[in-house]
Length: 173
View 1 (spheres, rainbow, N blue to C red):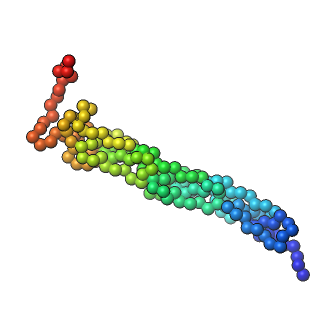
View 2 (view 1 turned 135 degrees about the vertical axis):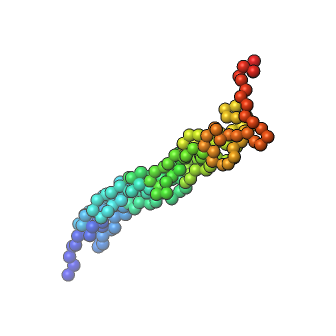
View 3 (view 1 turned 60 degrees about the vertical axis):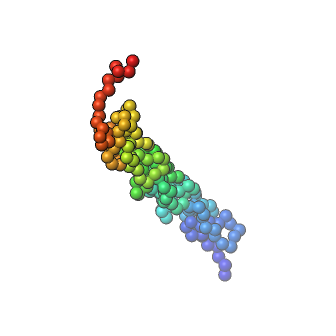
């Protein structure tokens, strides 16, 4: 004999059907339901509750959480999309946050690491998106650095056979 049965959890039937339909896209239902409940974006269904996706992951439509895998991307808990690390910082390995570049280094938008300032340049503050040239009025005209990754203006030195002199602004009338 045929009998009418309840659909199991995460399946539904609106009636008039010989089968139950699975809830799609992270939807869920209790046993015996006639419809599914949608899991909100940034969340996943644990089998008991809608829970926020962990930091470093996202869910656009609700359902399974996907890793932030694009270079320089990260997310906080409950994210529906990943962000790109701002210039002057890099995404942490676990993709849950960003860290400012240290003095002597820089980065553009969406980076996984910071780049050391090249020889002849420096950055004296954390979180820089570019390095400054030593050979300017702002540092020491005609100077360079001994190595990459220079983290202060005092690292700008004159090349061999030269010395640093102080030029008075009053000489320029």
